[in-house]
Amino acid sequence: MFLCRDRDAPVTKEGIIFRVLGYDHPPNACICDVEYAPASIYQSQDPRAPRGKSGAEYYKFYFDQGLNFVKKRFPQYQVYSYIHSEKLVGLYREHIYELRRPDEKLRSIYYSEIDDPLLNTMRKVLDNILDVTSLKLRDFGVFGSLLHGFYSVKYSDLDFIIYGSKQLLELIDALFSLYKDPSSGFMNEYCGSEPPDSRYKRFRDYHVDEYMWHQKRKMIYGMYRRAWRPIKVEFEPVKRYEEIKNEYPMINLIRKIEMVEAIVEVIDSSQSYFMPSIYYIEVLDSKDIPSDVDVKRIVSFVEEFRMQLKEGERGFVRGWLEEVEKKNGEVFYQITLSYCPQYSQLILKSINNG
Image (cartoon, rainbow, N blue to C red; front, side, top):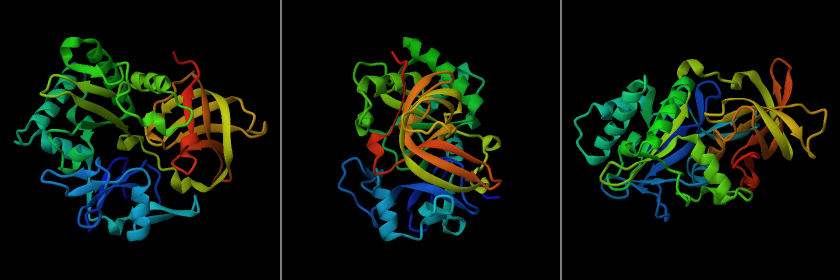
């Protein structure tokens, strides 16, 4: 059984670093995003892109740069998806030279003798959380530059993974309490009057106030201020192995129909923490969706829309209506939000927000 899960990091023989996307994969392969490439084979003019402790050893890809890089330079690093009838960025087992697992890396650096301000702060942040919860170190991982060893003490953030639904909910409760306590050093990244980033600008119909409100209540984006500099702290939810169910072998075909808008009510948001984020819904109103089309769920591959709506809430969605045909003959419909040429038109937001 080939077990890769979301945010595991396969590396090819050339040193290209990929990131596993989600949990639904063809046999002996994983669908991925490509994150970094060595400077020897790729360079970028984007000032955000260089990575490395001793100069620009790697460059990070943004938006569709990684997709174009793979298609032009390394087309073998694509996986044919019969349910989508197209090739997607991904790796077959034989192409994986190394598989970096975030939980293993965290334990390694936590217990290491490396003594620098960033890793010492990482240990303090985790110790604070472990002290006020029943969570264990094995419930966490690291991703980004910490996972790959080219972090910068001066500039890098603390990018954590939290494994498991139950563990995430306990972490959120703990962060809520820590954010309220000024002496803890923790604060919600989105508690200020100005946005700490400009990701909302990617979307045509997402106002900055809406973006701030949604991000603030997710609790997983924080700052730690009891270090030599304020450090951004992020916790990305990932499923535990026993929570993973690979839908790929159950699906025969996914057919994209058209872009639609709808007002929906969330029936079940328990899978919205992960990537892809899944919301089981009831469509309350739509001028685009025929009355005899029963849409079961929203599936979002867009990071900004993870944990966006809660159970019982009503929301507005604009995405692709898709027909899903399962191998057992069952057919159902979903609205999908994913990276595409119409990316800026996509939206998922509460219609009750304050």
